[in-house]
Each structure stands twice: as structure tokens, then as C-alpha cells.
Picture 1 (tube, rainbow, N blue to C red):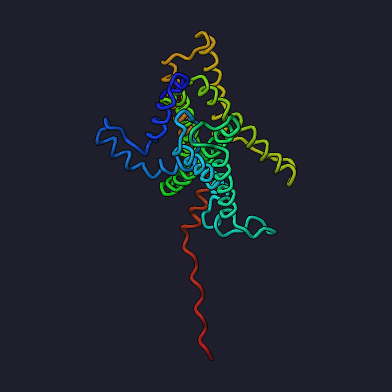
Picture 2: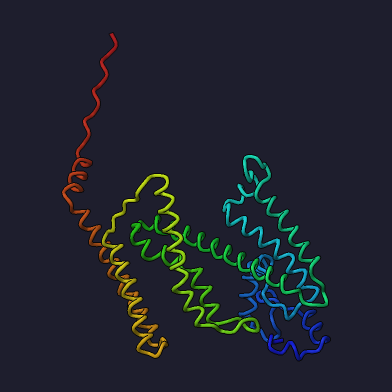
Length: 330
């Protein structure tokens, strides 16, 4: 059922829809191809974890199954949030929550999640959708759980990319401009793409909201991250001294140029961004990557041929004097 047709649907049809609940990534349709079924089997464990930890924001198929799934997902949301806070499963189960409270964070999260799940079951019924207050609470918990999942996935992706960069011998500047930057943006890419495309039967495509998130999400994170980090350092150690190298200046200039170009194109196109402009942005980013890599390679080559580097290599290449032979015992 589409949300727009709920008010014209009969109670029998609503009950039938609730009893034949189909979850994305869990069930397949009769028209699914063998390839789609194989992909669904591979992603089935992850889809199950997603449904058990992120309460759904759709209430038009409310029924016995959806009600129990909502209660279980609230408990799973608390556990995922605790895992995102502690990050270490062993510490989550063993480390105490506080010196005065020997209870581990995992046990506290499980108890809190179970209490919230029971509260959801007590506040809802199988034969009618939940109240506005319960809907709001479920949507908020789903949002928090989705943010925790994205943070966990982005952190693990960055850790894997750092390991690959260390094995390949890439410098920190190249990794920051390529692998780490891509890893940090995976969460925003997935979320903004989902908002722009919409969800079938649940949410309509909203490219304006996705475009606004592209600019406001980094702005929000930069202001908070820089403000909290700099403020904490100033309170503990005094003024923070920074130095901008050529890679950082190039990144700042590229960011300013892309923002100015997007603003100019939007104003000249009647507050719209035409489709060919996407390819312009792709080319702009490729040009920025080439400049950033060339600056890094130039710096690396200059450091290799510096006099101090030659002196260090020459001093390491000289043979060390052999230790004197011990005198014979009298």
C-alpha cells in the first residue's frame, strides 16, 4: 500500500497488508531473478541486523509482526549506540561503565534496551497504529541508530584504507587527499543518495534536501570538530599554533573555487544545477587530485635530494668501526 491510499483502504486490506509484511533485504518477490536472489542471500545477515537495530519509519503496514519488530529494533538501537561509543566489543562487555558503577556498558545498554522495548509493547497495540508520541520516539531512535551505523561503517572503512595505505607505502598527505577523504565521505554519500532517490513506498525523492545536506553536513561537522578541538586545546595548553603547507592551501583554494563555481552556475541557471554540471565537478575534482598528487610528489622528490638527506644517507652508508677485541685474561 502507498501512504497516500491509506485513508481509502478498508480495515481488512490493512490487516492483510500487515500480515504479509515484506522487509527489504529479507524477502524476495516471485519475479526476482536468480542473480537478485543470490545477492539477497549474501546481504541477508546485514539486512537482518539493520532491521533489528533501526526502527522503521513506515507505519502504514502496522500489525503484530511490525509491532514486535519495532520493539526489538529499539533494543538493538541502544546496543548499536553503545558499540559506537565504546568501539571495542571486549571492553563493551567487560570494562565498567564508571569507577563508582562496576556494571559494564554492554549490560547497561542491554537492560536499557529491554526496558524501552517493553515500553513500546505496552504503549502499542496490534490492531491500530501507534500514537504520535510513539511514532516520534521510533523515528528519533531510528535516526540515532542509522547515524551510529554510518559512523561505525565509516570508521572501519577508514581503518582498512589506512592499513592498505601503510602496506602500499603511501604518504599521509596522499592518503588524506584520496583514501581517507573517500572513506570519511562514504556515510554522507550513502545517506544523500538515498534521500535524493527516495525509498519505494516510504519516502519520495527529495534532491533538494540531499543537495542541502551536501553543503550543511560538512559545515556542521567542521564547525563542531574545529571548535571543540581548538577550544579543548586552548583550555588545557593555551593558544594553538598551526602551519598551513602547500597541500592544505591547495585544498582550501579548491574548496573555495568549487563553492564559487556552484554558486555562479546556480544563479545563472535560474536556481538550478543542470546535469552537465555534474561532469564539470567530476573533472574539477580529477584536476584537483592531479595537482595535489603532483605537489606531494614534488615535495617528496625535493626531500630526497636535499643535502641533509644526502648527509644522512652518507652517514648511514659508512661502515661502523668494529669494536676492539677483548684483551686476554691474565
